[in-house]
Image (cartoon, rainbow, N blue to C red):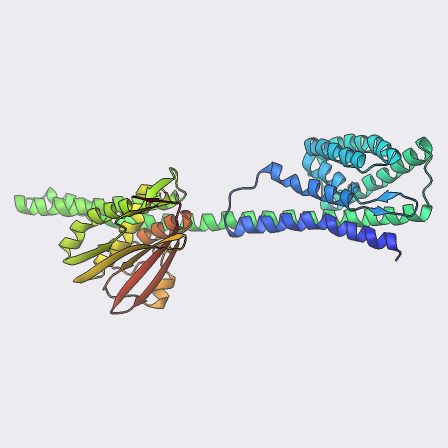
Length: 422
């Protein structure tokens, strides 16, 4: 293997770098459930490959410049269509002009537009054919490129290039374009599998939630129907009031289940805004105080007095998340103190909610936030599922520590958006 072949192989590795970078970006998108990547963003990778190839070429003793720019150019035109093809032509000619060499620039001015027009017609059908046919098309285009380049270089500009160099260049181009086509098709297949997995996960969750909600809503409706039927019987007014009260309570329970489900279904905040953490906490505490008093629970709250820290989120959903945790703590206690402390650590707000309830095992802690997992006899588990989803959508984290018979501590860590001193 001579020096030119080794240098061209290094040039080929430069082409592979953006391709693997694209693969990594798609994997990150899947793992972290990021938004869909825009189509224009994919054009960055063939452009990057082309630019890197031309910036790090192989220069022979005869001052001929060799690189594998045709590989990203051909594939970019085939997969990206005429728009990307036009961009690649402009970039190629611009770089070729700036790097010097009149003959090479004029050869590029003839060959690249010609091949670009060919790619325009072929790209319409390229994505619809099989991988084997795509490879054949890639090899055929590479062969056409070499015939055209040889003709223009020798017949129009009188350049003399050794046959051995042409052979090395041609075979490396063919092998390179075959490898890149296969790699790109494998990456596309992996992306499609990942998309199907995401859809399958969503369908599984929806199916599970639909079955669970059907069960959770049917129960209170059945009870309500029974009591409404009993209202038609000859009973005392006091009994009718009792039946009506129970029926309304069951309807409220069904409404709560539906509301929790709707909140979970829209976990991405629709109206993100700056939230003053102290004001949000006070509002939640004021709304939960009646429930605490009713259950004989003392609330101890410690929040900032002279400092204002802000987070970003949707007020209603954030308050609902805190309300769910505090409510669960109150319902787990027959008496005692539930404490809520808010303080900042570095660039985060930390909210600690400590109860003196029955506590949880490690297995129960690990299952918190799962659809319809609950430690209460009458609970649905939707409240905690909503809480975990909302805090996650705010880029926050929830940490839970618990000891059975002594109580549970929820720690919510949320990134600070801004700070104002009174």
